[in-house]
Length: 244
Figure 1 (cartoon, rainbow, N blue to C red):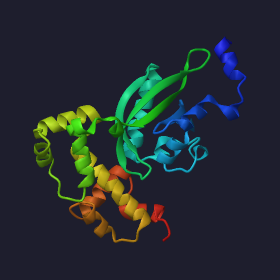
Figure 2: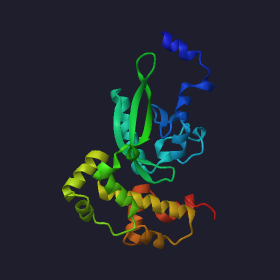
Figure 3: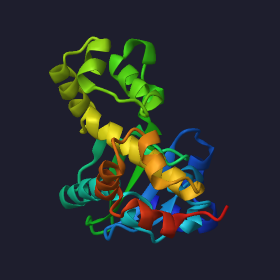
Figure 4: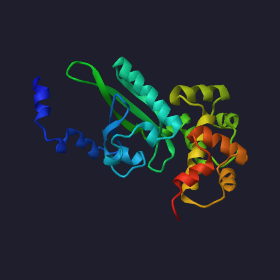
């Protein structure tokens, strides 16, 4: 055991240095084991996972906390990191806000090693990428903000591209290079998550929610909802509805 190991071994686990992350604004922190289960995280991370405290996320896996399209992406990145044992830095990816809506965040992940030098888990921090951008100088952010503000409308990606000085091909390429997703995919996922919130907290007819969230009809809504969240809207409401 070296001096560093000896130092940490004598610390009271109730007063871990990781508590420092509770005092860092807009920073989420987490630790996972090799099986993909969360070992610990700070309060901000727990709240973004839809839980009230870090105790409620311990032992949970991504698929228990996030929609399938998010959980799958997180797990693929984790598996690549654990296999190679090298950091994954500056990952720009979607992550839910406290309201459950998808926002762009930047993630830093590092492997953790045991005393034999074998990878035994990973840790990471997550920060809002949109808040870090120079919004006035970044037309791509302006596109994201426009989509979020007008998701109910019949949005046209070619029209949006033209409005913000891109060709459609340029916008698709820059969006994919930065966010690893297309503008149209982001729009659909945004609409689905907003609709899911209304299904959970209201008794509005499903068809009315579908149209109000920008979907063409109930069938179109049902198809995208199930593809994104792995369950149809009616089943989601029955499972998650809050009694009003």
